[in-house]
Length: 201
Image (cartoon, rainbow, N blue to C red; front, top):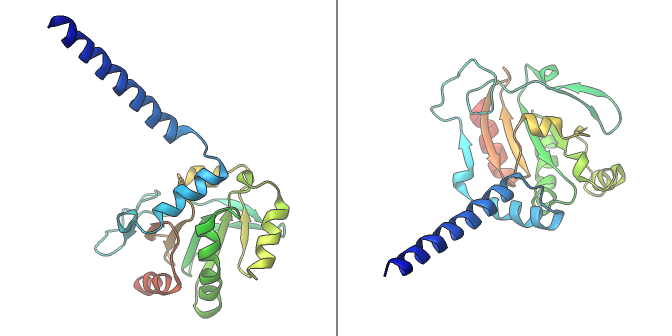
């Protein structure tokens, strides 16, 4: 009897160790493009992954939560121009993190271009360049989808790390004073983008 209890305890500890190891590996490992794409795609439709500014109070601190001041950064565009987030104070900004190999990013991009054409908002699309096979993939993507808003090249994914980006696309809606008013993990459609933009006005 004692021996069987001991065996059950050992097996239970082993199962827990394997589960714990798998969980920690999943959090720290960089996924392959196929794994990442499928994982990110599954996050797209979860409403719990979205945060809105309704009822949120401003914190006055720099951070990543709704109500915080968005962390400033500087990157070069695909065309080589230096751009800072703070350069756009005074107008609303849609800050989007993406990659050309990501299916939800591809699905979302035409709606982002439509928003750029139809609404008074600056769109800054930060490309996780280190995850791309080359800059040519980004150029081809921009050409294919007729993207006219700035594509920022996060060559070493330093800004993505600063913003703690895990799933892509991830989007921050930032008001004219630089305060985060909305955050979404996963692709958004045009109507949803407009809805969140209107809440900031």
